[in-house]
Length: 196
Image (cartoon, rainbow, N blue to C red; front, side, top):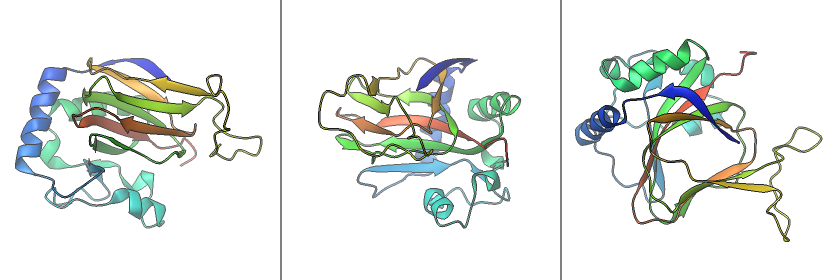
């Protein structure tokens, strides 16, 4: 579920910096969605190369804990200031700019950590759908939706672009959809589970 945190950002400054970044490092050819990672394992990543960190994590070649160095080229930014503020309280892993193109959605899935979202740009037709129960009795993500009234099992959330930081328990099965005609942009801060 989403929770509003006490953290705030200077949204106009952050938008300006991200717009400059996207002008410097144009990203093309992604039909559904794309993301750019601002953290890496060694601090040496070439920011003009888009690494598919999600695939590397899923293949076991990279873990959330490996993404602990904030790229030096982005350190004099509001994004880095927010990263530092969140890092004082949480162990932060990947930090990504995530875009969901118009009329697209993610698969229904569950992750293993808390994630923080800052909405940069959105539209009234962009939503998260979250299974309220999260996991079954065996700790496995609930990956099916029964074909009857689901209002007591699903939460539908629109997160505004208001300069606030929202916490998402990504252990709950969820998806995001963009039914609007503009791209939806979020900054997403993954946390590292305390056991690591």
